[in-house]
Amino acid sequence: MLRLAMALGVGGLMAIGSAAAQTYPSKPVTVIVPFAAGGPTDVAARIYGEFFSRTLGQQFVVENAAGAGGTSGAMKAARAAPDGYAVFVHNVAPLVAGPALYASAQYDPLKAFEPIGTLAFAAHYVVLRKDFQAKDLKELIAYAKANPGKINYGSAGAGSATHLACVLFGQQAGVDIRHVPYRGTGPALNDLVSGTLDMMCDQGLNMMGQVPTGNVRPIAIAQATRYAKLPDVPTSAEAGLPGFEVSAATAFYVPAGTPAAVKAKLVETMAAAYKDPLTRKRIEDLASEVPAAGQDTPEALGKFTASEMARWTEAIKAGGIKAQ
Ligand code: MLT
Image (cartoon, rainbow, N blue to C red; front, side, top):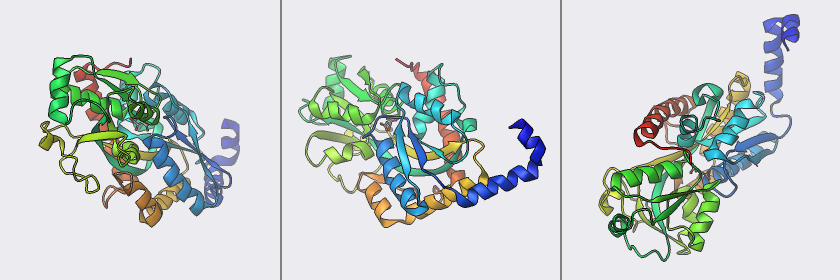
């Protein structure tokens, strides 16, 4: 590569880069999802992947590379060739929390990846197995106080958003609940439905499909306003835990060094996806939102990623959170 660069000179390389961008994509694109199939990151990636495939005329194929709270997939994406044929989708909190928790996570999220756009914002909910004895958040907290370490909750692994949200819940409610890590929130939700788990601090994007059937019971939304499609679910403040507010953001990135023209094509396609009624509906039906004006650019995602990095790195240190 060094010899090739010297022979062609920088101008020659740029010409190759922009020619490749003009025909991009000329083969299928791999979308690396760092969690198990069926969870929110996977579902959002597939919804947008379908739009990208339809619009760009090449398949955007999801590859699930789960493990270590999303850091295995992040390592894979960080090492992928920066040519536009590897797109990386991650939930922003675990993306930035991973390196603070895992010695094996040898990447700097702000340097290894460049932002393309946010796919969805989704509030977290405190959600119980259908027959759990507490009827609301106050009863849950009272039960947890009386039975330290007895309630178990599932997450997508240490450092995942579903883990961090329940750590915050435990800290703010002053309760000790037991963490059971999975390779993704999809498999954890299956165990909540079957009754193996007691609770989760799950994203609407994951849980929503199970709510109408009564298979799981959301008892509080971790934000300041109720969600219109679940009007009976109180906010955390209404339910007795003011300040417990946490939402997930799932986003597309590419490995650093991806040609600017390729990134521009992906960003342009993302902007079209935000306007596509079917894509919007599929996201909104899962208790989530596509980014509003001002949040819908790679720059906004870049800033958000950096501010989340500071926030979660601090929270992990302050809370003594460990990858277990
Ligand atoms: C998380 O909990 O961080 C993810 O949303 C997990 C997943 O997508 O399965």
